[in-house]
Image (cartoon, rainbow, N blue to C red):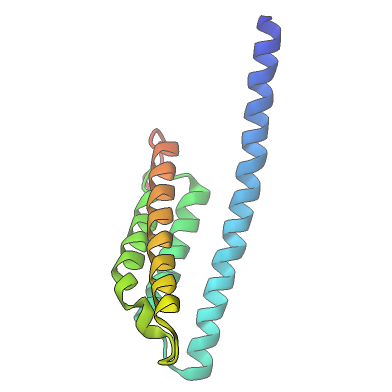
Length: 136
């Protein structure tokens, strides 16, 4: 029975390592897509909103800290959650004037959902890397 339990723990650790590598690669691709989109916007329009610049910086900081498994990885995510929450009341005003009230409320609810999801994920990341030795 002990041998089975040890083998099971070893298998779980191997699966966790495999999942972590895939998640890190996906995060890197996502960060590159966000940075490329904002770079394209900056080059074509010669203007970048504060939301785009802030989002790029925070996303890049999160990916770098996540790959390094630093204990402060959760801070950029928390900043992103706060920005989602701050933008939630104004999310309905970004649509066209012909949008219905239902569509405006749906957009606002989606922004709040993103804020809550990012907040929960930041707490999960904080718990995961709490014992990390790297500060940055």
